[in-house]
Length: 133
Picture 1 (cartoon, rainbow, N blue to C red):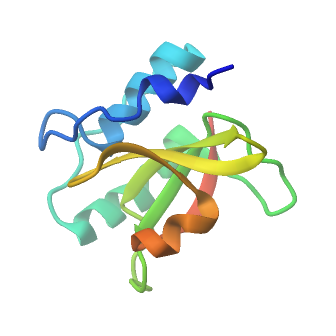
Picture 2: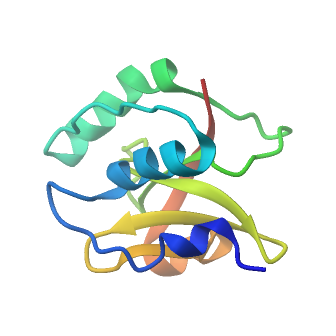
């Protein structure tokens, strides 16, 4: 049986029209019946991080290490090695094939599904998993 995430894989990244935040909003609405209205993101990485730090509590709550992630939870990521930033890329937690994955949309790749363990090989690292409020 196909996993729900498969219907989104391959959707193109289009700057200003369909990016990681647009994917999250779309999937939350279509798959989880949640209306998430993320703010228009700032243009620089530092400004995005500051915006996420300031607003994340309005949208989601960070899961503690002992809490189980749920499908559709927000996954914040950052470029690997960027220690000063909290995370400026967002995706969705997916449990498929007995493994944890993240569904995300990235320039040059479009919408793709990667295991959490594979993120460092893709130049990304997870900074946290968040439960939607």
